[in-house]
Length: 190
Image (cartoon, rainbow, N blue to C red; front, side, top):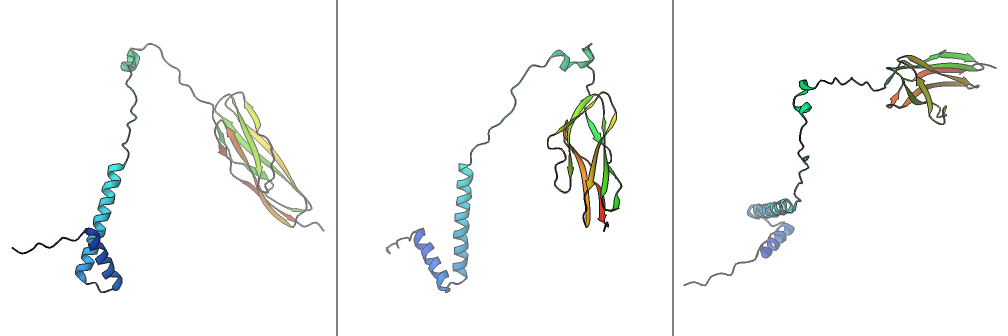
């Protein structure tokens, strides 16, 4: 009976193939074996990662009992009033004049705000030259559903040419920003 060959370890085979690849003396079978060994290690890593992944915890709400009104809303005799939350919308911001020339320019801005009922808003007026018009938030009260206008006047001092804008930022009850009302000033005074 012939003697059995001692099998070589996986480590020996990997070293052998790495050596062949480094020497660039490998042939097609070595390439195939190298790719298969690489795929084997990749598959083993993926299986390990999947096995050690933490389990997902379900966050279903706990059961509760429904009231008779929820199960049969028609049986309920009380009618709940529809509540409408206070809300505002912004109209188109305007400036007059839009173009001026001369030694100084005075620009009158109008920011219309329409409410759906009584309530109040907080707001700030802002300019394109980074000047804070309102250092702290201002408040405007509405006694009913109405439209009010927030004014602002910007006076330009002599400048060669300047194009700027101002806009309104409503902070509450919900954030809103108006369009930019822009103007152009050209200094012609000599």
